[in-house]
Amino acid sequence: MTPGEDSVAGTSRNLPDRRRLRAISRRLLAWFERSARKMDWRDTDDPYRIWVSEIMLQQTRVDAVTPYYRRFVSAFPSVRALAEAPLDQVMKLWEGLGYYSRARNLHLAAKVLLREHGCRLPQEPHRLATLPGIGRSTAGAVAAIAFRKDSPILDANAKRVLARLFAVQESLTRPSVEQTLWEMSRGLILPGKGRETALALMDLGATVCTPRRPACPACPLHAHCEGYREGRQETIPARRPKKVLPHHDMVAAWIADGKGRVLVGRRPDRGLLGGLWELPGGRRRPKEARGEALRREVREGWGLGIEVGDRIASIPHGFSHFRITLHAYRCRRTGGRPQTDREWRWVHSEGLADLAFPRAYRRLIETVFPKEGKEKPPPRLR
Ligand code: SF4
Picture 1 (cartoon, rainbow, N blue to C red):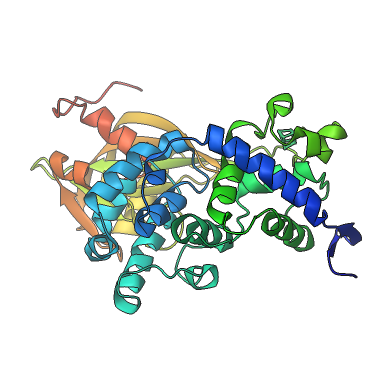
Picture 2: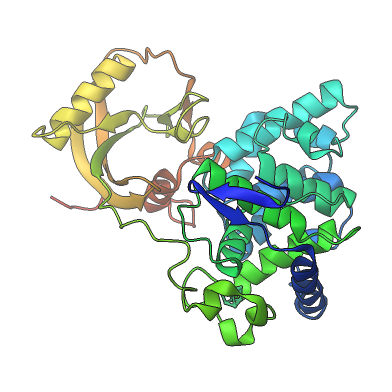
């Protein structure tokens, strides 16, 4: 293989020549100058804020991120403030944004920065990528945006734009294809223009070269776009057939202690929804009645006997790989004291507002304690 060539899916793919890449870059940057989106985190040079925004933007839309970002950086205006905050407070400010490992890793990384880097983010992508929760593309983006490095990015938007631009039809998850896309991304950076190139690729992918129905006639790159020329803009990247997501029935026990407090436990730090709070309960087994499942889960997981009363609500919720319906019941403790290896508490209604719960549990709490804060009598659902 000669310089400038790479292998895609076992075949030799020529990387576009420099002159063509430069022409594309100039058009992209000119478009960005006219069309750059306004965002809170683009008005700052503070690497900490830029890092927080990049983590929040992973798999999450700008309009969903904006209010979270504002609350987060107002509560934790610096690496030190974040590192010294209790994890519960960090999780609470992330509640509802999803992919909670991002919050835990951000907190962990802030502690590493405090301990080992004097609260300063490293500037080089390879050093950024050693911090918890920072992958190669996020490291490239932070280095480019915060430190004006000519470092490439390859987030989902950039990947899609590049694959269409150069008509890459192979699976984009193949390591050899991904490596070629990195080279393409790097090849597009004009000297000193790493920041603008990264932001322009992100904006073009989000607003013009969108996953469905890209606006090719309005695209500043359409004259150079192989995917468009070949009429393949909507079939690149190839879509995987949609899978039917499995569904699980979850049961939860609303156990009060007679003093207006309810029993809650914290999920282990690792794993799905790690570090968030929830009610005692778990997954219903096939053919098991919900009441039976609830009694078993609370007995096995908490050492408590319960009587299952009225159903409070059945709340559907979707995750990336499965769906659940959370069925919650008012329950009366009939025996035992809480015995579990997880952290647990009896909490008043005001205390429930201070803890971070997964979205389905938050909706459940709002069913029991509507906004005015008074407890609602249980609805008669069965
Ligand atoms: S011409 Fe179409 S497919 Fe090509 S980069 Fe622009 S929007 Fe994407």
